[in-house]
Image (cartoon, rainbow, N blue to C red; front, side):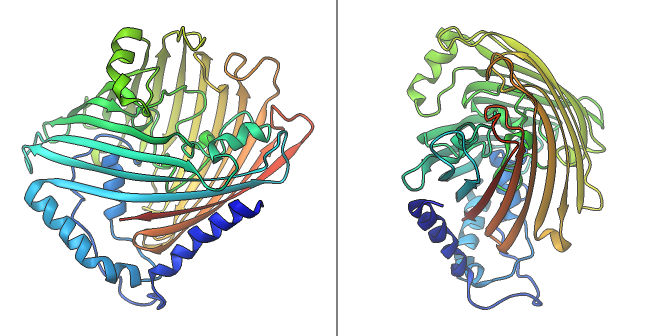
Length: 427
């Protein structure tokens, strides 16, 4: 571990002691919520609405010092939401990853993301057809003098991302859209600056802030989902159990250049389109229990030299006894700039008693894309396991281990181990 990166990781871990010196194990958990459970939401667990809801939900935790000290702040947030319909939050995520082998000059990486996001319901608050303005501003940066975690995979010879969102793009506007729901949410659309990964091939373990880190177990590396930019998405419950999600997004979106959103969308006119049909036992379980098939198509990106392409993905997951979540994921891509052209993944998530800690393991086989990565590459295998330790209602650390077998861009190595440690604070 390099000295600078190690120092940054230790600094992040020291934040855990702010949660208080006295253990709250064995005590009755106190409820410090801002009443965000009813915030209008259309998007997966990592969307703004999904994050607000999950972070505000009562969790079992070990230390209550931080919660006691911040209770007036969360009470104030509840009053703001009740009076004005504005729900908001801040979070900070830090991640360190180190590999035992590398094909390049770097074998470790550290980075962080600060985010400010919220949802302001301005129409039909409490009604069946609420309208909201949803926003998210981020700063993604390196910690120390090395590389950001998003670049570690290719540095060590793995054709994929060991940490999907942890880049160093600095400030970015990643969400700014109008969200409209009708008929108690049975029909909804978002229009504006959207993130396609909030809607494409979503399942219960898709959140990179709280579960897996490797892209293999998130959106899926066979889907070339674009960066955030102008777009639209429509969702509807066709029956009580069948749902449809369809969307269009700018293939050339650049959230670091919001002034170019309109010219990129209308002048370049190169789009990523997706259509998903799925089954769920009920609407309120749509992201926990679902089986779906996703089709996507992306236009040729002339300036970037990326050909057009299409693909399909299948996903099945089920939340059993509110503890177990087995999943199966398959993907196929035909060009379009996808990292992988074939992928099969399976795994299991497990919430410990009271939905306090979360453990997960995933296994994946993939075939790198000839156009997206390079021709003649061998298949590779990915195993990831993590354990999210909920230290307080709003602070968690997640040790993570990945085993990359036969990394496609590092044929000299049969296997590469990647150890990671993530810390996340929400306010």
